[in-house]
Every structure is written in C-alpha cells, then in structure tokens.
Length: 254
Image (tube, rainbow, N blue to C red; front, side, top):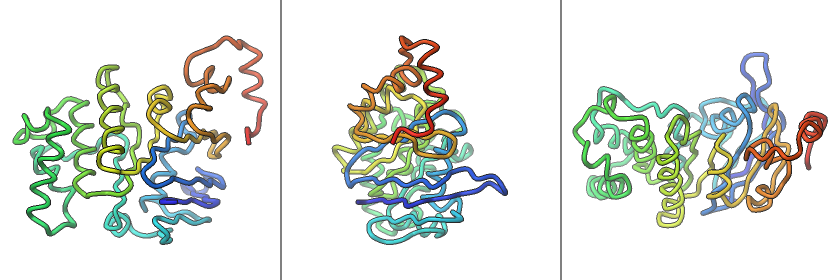
C-alpha cells in the first residue's frame, strides 16, 4: 500500500476530532472519503500531511512511517496537500504561484517542463500566467491550487473538497482533470468530498465517515448501490422516514 493509517486519534484541544481511523490507499488508485461537515475528513488529511499531529496511531507512506513529521518533510517525500479553500497567494502571479509548488526542487529544466505540463491540463491558467491569482475566478483558483501541487511531482495528492463552491460545469471539469492526472501521470489520489456523486464516479474505493469514525468502506461501485448512500448522499429518498431513523440508530456498517 502507498498509504496506511492505523488507529489514528487526533484532537483539537480537548476535543477528539477523529477516533481510531484506519484506512489504506493503494498505489495509482483514487480513494475518496465521504461524510457530512464535521465528520473529520479534513482532519484526516491534515494528520497525513503533518499539519496536525495525532495523539495515537501511525501514518505510513511508501513503507516509511511519517507520523508527526513536519509538513515540509512530508512534502519532500512526494506527498502534496491541496487544502480546502484553495489558499493561493493572491498577490503573486499565476506562474509565481505554480513555481511555489516546486520550491524544494533544483532542476530548472524539469520545472520549466512541468509548467508547460500544468498549462496543458489547465489552458485557462496559461492564458493568465502573468495575472495576479487574486483576480482569478473560484474555479480557476482551484485549478491553480491543483497545478501548484502537481509542480511538486507528487506520487500522492491529497485533495480537500476540490468541487466546493463551483458550478456543475466546473465540477465536471475538475473531476475529469483528477481522473486524467491519475491515469496519465500515475498520481495516487486521496479525495475528500461532499459531492458524493462526483467522488464515487471517479474513485476506485471509498470510506464514509461519521462523527470522527469510519462507518463504511467498499469499492465505489458497491457504495453507489448502498441504500443509505443513495438516500443521504445521492439525494434518493425513497426510504423516507424509516430510512432516516435506521441511519441514526446504526452505530457502524462494518
């Protein structure tokens, strides 16, 4: 496995945000984590990338334990984190933002080549390469955040809510880019999403989180057939009140 989490517990002060989370991400796969706001999805990604330290458990990346390492050291291993909210540098140009993703690299020719690679995936960025990132639309900023991560030449990319706030057309475009990066560049992807339909359509395997715990895991084609997933994440409410009561009463689906 490229990435393995075992019994992770991470806190915000006295509050336990994730409770005994274990998951695996196979090499060259797309894995998604689904769940409502506050389920702990973002905390899982922050724990993997080193932005937060777990109080218990272990994180192993490509056979090497990285639990509690600084984000800079984790990134240098080839793990890129695209946080929720894009977090571009608004007063730097598009190209300067992209070059920030290659801060740890010293191969000038390779960086130049990868810039053109990013512009090939995101033509809208190529047209605006000299424009300050603060003037980009939300969709273009999301493209920039993904492109900046790609400049690291990652083997694993953590994507936190890449569809957040985007129009359906842009959501479809971002989903297609994620799929292409996985297939063409062989980048393994761990995707956190509330847009379950998009995530389940492009991912190979999925985990569902509730109140800091993983309550379900399965290949995505099977998750899409699960009654509870259809009702609560895909908007199919044929089960009515009885289904909602069953969801609340169920402690775990494992």
